[in-house]
Each structure stands twice: as C-alpha cells, then as structure tokens.
Image 1: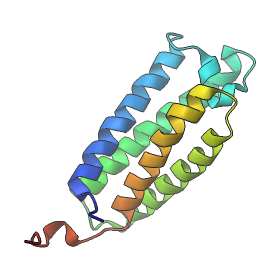
Image 2: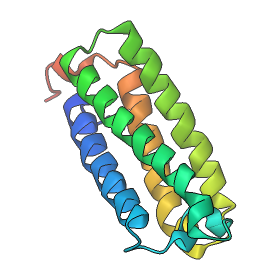
Image 3: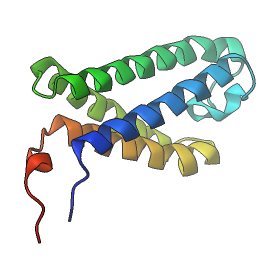
Length: 135
C-alpha cells in the first residue's frame, strides 16, 4: 500500500483544520446551532461557549503545529506535538462514535479519523518521500 507524501499530509491537514476552524466560528456566531456539536449534550448556548472557544484555539494551534512541522520536519518538539495531535484526534474519533447526534456520528467520525491518520503520518517521519519511484 502506498503511503501519502508528507507534503500531501501537510496540505490536507491545513485544509481540513481550516474548515474546522470556520465551522467552530460559525457555531460561535450562531449560524450553526450549538446542538450539533459536543454530542448534543449541552442545554444551551452559554454552556457550550467555553468548549467552542477551547476547540477553536486548539485547532488554530494544530494549524500552527502542522505549519511548523512543514518548515522543520526534523524538529523533536514538532514530533511530540504531532503525537499529541494524533492522540487527541484518535480519542475524538471514539467520542464521535458515541455521540447522540447523527451528524457527529456520520460526518465528524470519518473526519477525525482522517485527521488522526494524517497526524500519525507526519509524526512517524517516514523518509520514503525522497526515494526514487519504483518502475
């Protein structure tokens, strides 16, 4: 099975994480109802607000981490951060599987699984990006 390149993983992570940031901003400004996030477990908008802000800041941090990793692939701190990203997205995938809302189960689960796998790709530092292509 052919692995995706580090460059492709970086680009996909930037695109998906940027879309997630936009999504959370839309929840914060009440364009998207708060009931479709966090498993639908919050009774009102005020209760979900701190979690949405934290999620927004975390995803912005992830974008910065991916950008940093793209600029410095050999960085040990970047590697640790990507392992943490992998853990967050892997746990989030499990959480989405048990969400009460169908939207999270059907949409967020595959998205967070993809983010976990892309984070893992960058964390593993596979070096075959520069290997010659097989005939």
